[in-house]
Length: 243
Image (cartoon, rainbow, N blue to C red; front, side, top):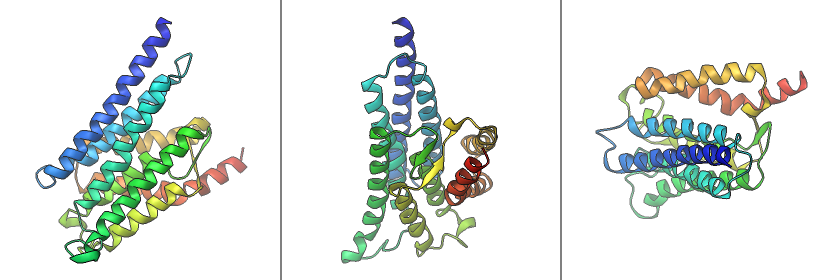
C-alpha cells in the first residue's frame, strides 16, 4: 500500500504541475502576449514534460487511480487544447481585425482546434492504445501550433507567417483535423531502439527552447514537429513491416 501511495502521489503531483503550467500559460497568453511572447510555448513544453513523467510514474503503481485518470485528462485539455487555442487567438488568423460575422472567424478556428484536442483526449482516455496513437497526439499538436503561433509574432518569420494569417489558419485547421481523424502515429511504448533515439534527440531540441528561446530553437521545433506530423504514420508503417 505504501508503494501504491508513493507512486500515485508523485504521479498526481506531476499531473497538477502540468495543469498549473497550462493555467499560467493561458494567463500569460491573454494578459502578457507582448511582454512575455516566449513564455506560453515554454509552458506547453513544461506541461508536456510533466505529462510524460506522470504517465511514467503511474505505470509503476500496482493499481490504476480513477482520480489520476480524470485529473490527467483535464490537465491535458488545459495545456494542450485550450492554451494553444488562446495562443493562436493572440496572433493573426483569417478574419482578425474584421467586423461583423467575419470577425468571429478567429474564434471558430481556435475553437475548432480546442474542440478537436478535447475529442482526441476523450478518445485516448476511453480507448487507450498501446504501441501507437490513433490521431495526432495532443502534446505533439500543441507543440506544433504553439510554435507556429509564437513564430507568427516574430518579424524574422513574417516571410512564412504573413500578416494575413493564412498559413497559421491552415496549420491550425489541419492539425485539429489530424487529431480527430484515425491516423496512426508511433508511440514510445513500442520500445524500439530507433524510436528511443529519435525521442531523445527531439526531446533535447524541444527542451532547449525552455532555456534558449528564439528563432533558431523555434525553427528546429517546427521542423521536428512537421516531420512527425507529416511522416509519422509512414514511419510507423515502415518500421512495423520491418519487424
